[in-house]
Image (cartoon, rainbow, N blue to C red; front, side):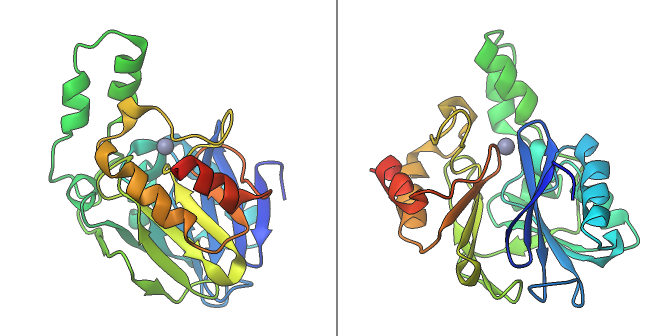
Length: 239
Ligand SMILES: [Zn+2]
């Protein structure tokens, strides 16, 4: 294992696919790759090779990837989904219902357009990040409340706020919550920049929903996982 990869629980690994950008590798059977792998987020287009390398370093084959689950459409998460979809593994790519048209390349990005011409640091940041990765026309919908037979069971939890279709993935048996960008842990646990949220009015409800789940490790899209009093701290943040 290299220093970009750490194990969070049985069959659950975090891979730092870019600077402060996480993807997660899940063993479908909860241990090895007997039933293949699922990945949660993919990093940017440039992060794909790193993710592939990390999968190999874990002792698995990239062609074992059966599922790509996206927490949301921003390119630092979906950037390599198309690459995986077109690989010989040909995994199924799934995303939240309200983010799906963007992942498929059928919908424009109002958030980015709103930032067009905004030369402030934040405006430029919004313009840069609020673009999707290469489209995945065949991507399909993941509905909130769905239970996936992966790594002991994954509950799909709607978490709109950062984007309308944002999802979190709750691995209850493993005590892990993969929160996407519902929260960041750099430089501390916080809600992230408001300007990057395209469903801000729904954020607090989502955070309360996530804080109501049982988990030990809070694993975000950006920053290190939080393992000390993670639930309490998330509940405090949700207010
Ligand atoms: Zn992100």
